[in-house]
Length: 573
Image (cartoon, rainbow, N blue to C red; front, top):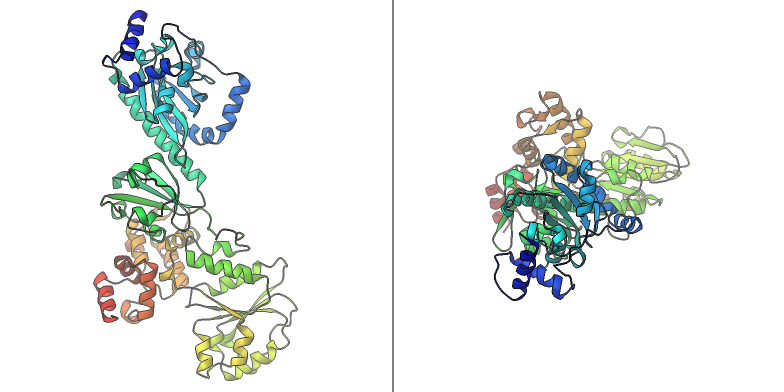
């Protein structure tokens, strides 16, 4: 197109005549003249900001540049043989990162396809970056779509990059100095920049929300874990605190998404997220939305345990005892507050729930190097020697319920002169034994200033976290669980709790022939359902509450059929 013809077409558009140009281009041409006062008959060279200005723009975009750079480098290697130039511009239109063939540096700089070039629409006229900033949409400005005659040889395809709050953060642009005539020749470039912009947003969300839950979303299970379409970040209460741009349309088209609770847009809460973690087959991780649609979800747990706002991070070894389980985190936070005191602690929990480990973690919260001494009550008799006479440290009374009457009296006398901090552990309700006259009340109150209760394994909401942690301890690097094996483990009753789980994983690691532990590698449960007995009513209610009322999930946790859970609930009224 001759220069005169280009100026004439812009004039016809301003007069309201149809010329066949895209509506995005026509609207931009009008802004160039009516808002910015630009002259289409006067070519303007590319504007490159000063070194000082460029430094300022790059500093403000430093974090995003670092997050995006590896992905953009991969994109450029993919298109480098086709003479494309890749630009990353900030929200003001200034190019803050650049990938191009240095052999053509002079030509690229003259065209504005270079670091420091300003592609804001008010300065450069209609262009890929400028139109993308204005519309918030991916666009191709091809050759004579450009307003300024200086840019009409170029073809520029740009896609927006939004931050986690939904604000425009940058623009990714793929440009050519010379291109084929048809605009459709840039369809592949459009697909590439859209995909790359989405991946940059995903990487940015993951980097910004390491201590929060992230829920990745896809309309297809095949790409859920490798290339999801959207993602949101959630705080401990289930409020959406961050998102990629596509999440808005995926979860709540037409209504704001940030700040809403997950259960307001989908039929699940933050407590259900562990069931959407890696290990379960992708096709089973279905999320039902409130508007009737369905998506597939992949949940990623916080990289560090969340604590309630205003509380310090858990001290000592407490932070390593639990993953994303609100109940356990609350218990550990309470233990942390009690750790510095001399109040005697009673730790209750089934066999294998980690009572001694919790006691040692509480002991390690103290800054001194005092000893941790274990006294096994099961082997204590009336003629046994008195307790250790150390003046500081922790005395751990293991299995307090195993003391007979004579041993209880002996222990009470020994504790009279004991200067150690007492932490006792019991597998039963020791208070009930006091009421029944089977345990001395004076001894009970001597060792139980306050109590901490560890939940059984089947009620823990951080089961996947525990699995992964124990597997790393039990096996060589790289060994992993198949989805079927993980589902099998989560369905068991675990009467032996953490101790039984650890032993099971150690055995499975030895039995597995490859790098994957499958169901047939898992040793059978040591106690079957008949030996373990039917689930007590109170326990059934706890499991159901921990599963958010989801009977199918509760059945998997208990190792029974859903119909069995339903039958038991009906029997309980």
